[in-house]
Amino acid sequence: MNIITKSNLLKLQCNFIKQGLVSFHGTSQKSAIEIKVDYKMKNKEGMIENKSEMISKEDETVQKTFHGLIKGERSSLAKSITMCESVHPKKKAQAQVLLAEVLEYNKKKGRKRNAKSNALPMTKHASLKHGTFRIGLSGPPGAGKSTFIEAFGKFLTERKHKVAVLAVDPSSSTTGGSLLGDKTRMPELSVDANAYIRPSPSSGTLGGVTRSTNEAIVLCEGAGYDTILVETVGVGQSEFAVADMVDLFVLILPPAGGDELQGIKKGIVEVADLIVINKSDGDLVAAARRIQMEYISALKFIRRRSKVWKPKVRRISSKTKEGIEDLWEKMKEYRNLSLESGELETKRMNQQKIWMWSHIKHEIIDIFKNHSHVKDKVDTLEKEVSLGNITPGYAADTLLSLFKSKKL
Ligand SMILES: Nc1nc2c(ncn2[C@@H]2O[C@H](COP(=O)(O)OP(=O)(O)OP(=O)(O)O)[C@@H](O)[C@H]2O)c(=O)[nH]1
Ligand SMILES: [Mg+2]
Image (tube, helix red, strand yellow):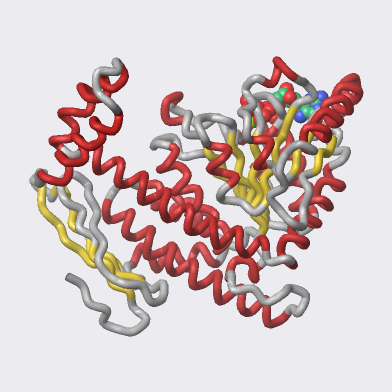
């Protein structure tokens, strides 16, 4: 059992037992946390030892990484993102303590900025006051996402912005390497001192990948990056997940219609705040115009999600860079309107809740599936359900009662 020892200290007890389960006890005050971790480690003699440690902000690795990160050191930023991606209990705990520190730091930085500037309305949300802009990008393979990020990223760094590019590509865990955040397609941006490109983690499920990307956003903001681009290709539900972690969601399309765009999932157009028809250059201008018109018409039938913003369709060329400045103006317009109306703040607050539940669901399903008694029955029951021999409800009840009645 845990007790809160100081009013501002949240103590979490986190027992990583054999099967990798985590249990948290405690109530929240502020973000300073301590996490107890139990894990196994090989000693010098090669014997497995049980270890138990308390990770707090005094932890040496946390301290070192935090100070490096807020100075903007890329190696510390990279290290901290790797910590978030780790499955090792100790590293996971260090990542959570570090994140709490960075959140606190971002809040303080936000308050300072806000005090200096009267331009922004008073908002409760710390990272908004601090003024970061999170932009999600999705589009079918070959639409020109990487080429666009190279052109747009350079455009921003030339205007004194610091740009972080993150990627969500759950398919990279099966293909063995990340296709996104591909530095070879971003030759100039990848060597730009004011840009940081991080490919998608190459292991894990969509739940795991999105969790570490969410955390990476906070870390990049702590390291001083003010514009965060999150790229994804439509695999599984990844573009919907990305739409839920950003302020503005951009769909990039090539100047091709109908059959050629079969990869585009229904529903993705509905969550886009901006639709960008790329490759509007040379012989492709006429086709790009036609597609632009088609999407303008299509958007008329889509229910508006914002009171202050109507999704727009713009044409650009990432090759000639035409239209990029106009697109940035539109993005800023969106940001200002949604900030002033309070919609952006509400959006970020809701996103936090969405992610908390998403992580819980992801973890709980994992725990459920790995429960020794459930594991034995899952395949048989799934088969029976698919053959129509039993109802899904009955199968679910059977598995749930096995889960609830038998101890691990
Ligand atoms: N003409 C023209 N070609 C472009 C433009 N943008 C990208 N391309 C070309 O389109 C092809 C695909 O571009 P990428 O940037 O790799 O596309 P992507 O969306 O990142 O593709 P994946 O990473 O495979 O999903 C490349 O041959 C680019 O040179 C553009 O604005 N105009
Ligand atoms: Mg690409």
